[in-house]
Structure formats: structure tokens, C-alpha cells
Image (spheres, rainbow, N blue to C red):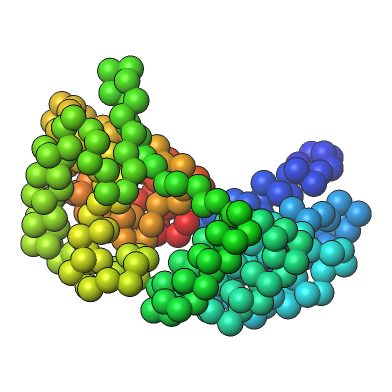
Length: 281
């Protein structure tokens, strides 16, 4: 654009920074952001800072991301702090997460995303008293967590599932398929990541709960309801959990199917045991 005489605007820069964030391009993101702030300072807005915080946070540069937020030329909004909090969840940094959450609640006391991220981080760290305290605070504040669900459209009909669902007419066959997949995945070395089982229960129960996640139920249904070898598309209203992401990669290799999962952040194309996001999402 520059070589042909077109001036990139703030939307162009947002697209560039967002692409760097989604692709894990830390150094390229740094260069773009430096260019914008040095030569196009009038065009820099909160969205660009949110993207840069996300780039740094996803790359594990949490201290640098937090310092960037603190030194912004404008007051950060809740989305900027949420980008930092989300990165803290990924990298299990409780201290920085608590600081980010405190800033979010001062701006938006009813931000359900912040409560959920913080509660999930506490759960992953085994801090169950803090989980309970956060959930009590949500209830007292009237904050409602969006219920996660996944769905598949088959022959024009939407089949939707929630975690631990027992209501579908084919649910017994679905769980039977998932038990078969579970054994197959163990044969290729799968071990459940229990950090994503966000309840204070025994380890064996945590693994059982992971296998009842909505995206696995949707995939189980699609496998028993479609032609062998055909592709599968699953939609989810929230972010796919890390353990489910690993499981779906392995399932795509075991059953020889391409599986597309659209979660709240992006499309994941699973094929032959790998995902298009390269495990960076």
C-alpha cells in the first residue's frame, strides 16, 4: 500500500496486528506497532493497544504487556485489560491476573468474562477457596456466566449439546463412541490435561468430566451420524478448551476425518492429527 501511494488507515493496522496475534508473530507485531506509534501516532487507538497486549501476552511477555498497559497515552478500557487477563490464564500467572481483574472490575463490575477467566485460573492452580469466593461474588453481583454449548447441523437440523448432556435421543450411542475413542487415544499416548477440569473432584472424575465436554459430544454425534470419511463441522459459542483441542487433533488422525471447529475466537481445521492454528490460539 505504501509503495503504491495508499495510506494505510487504523483498520489496516488493526488487521495487521490481529493477524500477528493469531499467528504468534511477536517480532513482526512489535515492528508494526512501533511503526504505527512512531509515524502514525494520530491513528493509534485502544484497539491497537489491545492487539499489542494480546501479541505480547500470548508470547508469554506478561510483564512487558502489563507495562504497556500502564504506560498507554490514553486510559485503558476493559478490553485491553481482558487481553492481559486472558494471557495470564494461558500462562497461569495468578498475580498478574488478579491485578488485571481488579482493573476490569473497577471499569465494569459485571464483566462475566473476567470472572470466568479468573475463576478458571484459580481452578487450574488448585485454589478452590478462591474459586468459591469468585463464584459467590458473581452470584451476589447478579453476574451470569454464559453456558457453553456446541452444535452440529445434520440434514438441516441443529443438534446442540451442553457439557454432561443426557437429553439427545442418541446419547447412549454417542457416549459409546466416545468411550471407544478414549481407548484409541490412550493407545497413541493421550493423557488428559486435568487443569481444564475446573471442579474440585478426584483425578478420575476430572477425566470423566473432560470427556463429557460439549464439543466432544457434538463430534461423537457427528461420527455416528455421517458417512465414514466425510468432513465434520462443529460450532461452539465459547473458546474450545486446551484438552479438547488436543483430543480433537488426535481424533482427526485416528478416524481419518477432517474436523472443523468454529469457537468464539477462530476456525480450527483439524486433519491428520494437526490443527491449522499450530496450537496457538
